[in-house]
Image 1: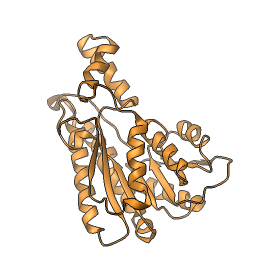
Image 2 (image 1 turned 90 degrees about the vertical axis):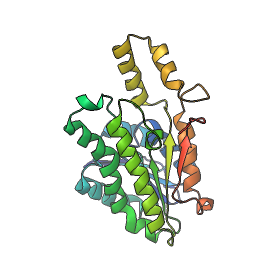
Image 3 (image 1 turned 30 degrees about the horizontal axis):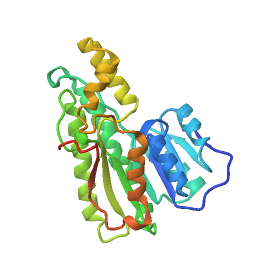
Image 4 (image 1 turned 90 degrees about the horizontal axis):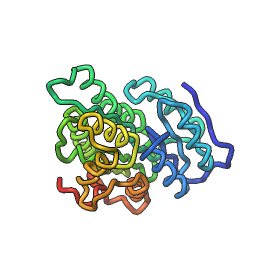
Length: 261
């Protein structure tokens, strides 16, 4: 376990913890919530990216931790509270995907994908739940995927995990409906992140297409003909975390340009 913090003064707003906060969508969410006055904690496995993002945000801190390990999550959350106080906003963004035909995919890979995308969500929600209940406006936001709303070939484990994540969101939203906590998911389509860069490389290897052609194949899922930008997902998350979003609960909001689910 390692921790760190930026040298700038601490904002006065609620404490938001973002898993997978060192890159891509997670980093964009951290930037958006910091801009709206949240005290931000970034959590992830790699110290370097976390420290780099935190250094750009007022009063931000970072903690290393593995969402697949409940004890690691509990320890990371304790360190986060020690610096920034109780967690009022939890954004579960950490994720992983492996592309393979179902019949060639090992059970170890299946468990790996489930552990990051679904078990990790359970570990983090459990570790933060008491704080969220006590908050004036607790917010749990899961960064799921359009893969939680429909199927995609060659990503069976990821689709199954993200469907499970949305199911958990809907169940928790009902369980907590009489509290001050809301539970929602945002479901990005193909987004300009490391995961898409890896997907493009695999398409090139498998088909012999150029990088531009591979990117065009992924962008074609979006009726707008483009990849989603991380900042667009971050804006949706920021809206769900705002004080006025208290009636938005149990939703899975697609950020995908109108892709049919």
